[in-house]
Amino acid sequence: MVRHVIVWTIKDEYSDSEKAEIKAGIKKGLEGLSGKIPGLVEIKVITEGLESSSGDAMLDSLFESEEALKGYSSNPLHVEVATTKVRPFMKVRSSFDYKEGAL
Image 1: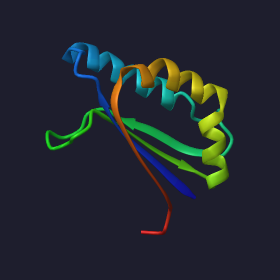
Image 2: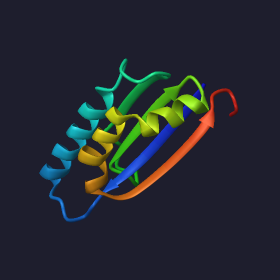
Image 3: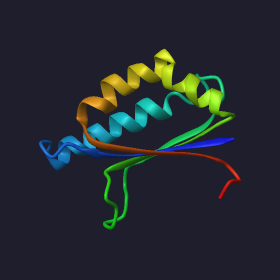
């Protein structure tokens, strides 16, 4: 199993209410992929971090394998969400992938 984690920081130009709408769109879009992409075991988007957080939203997803993660990256359903709900609004994107049990 491979864990895929992303933390996003939304561009400063957006108001708090716009950021809330952006985060809701990301959550709905990405979590809506559950059950639709081969090898995707679980997916959740966290949009309400603690004050100590340095990002605005986080993706936490689990895949059957590295190959499944690669397939997800290029899957048209994922690409659609990424290009319409995520990428246009982000200032910073950090990711970390690891094999479960390799902690």
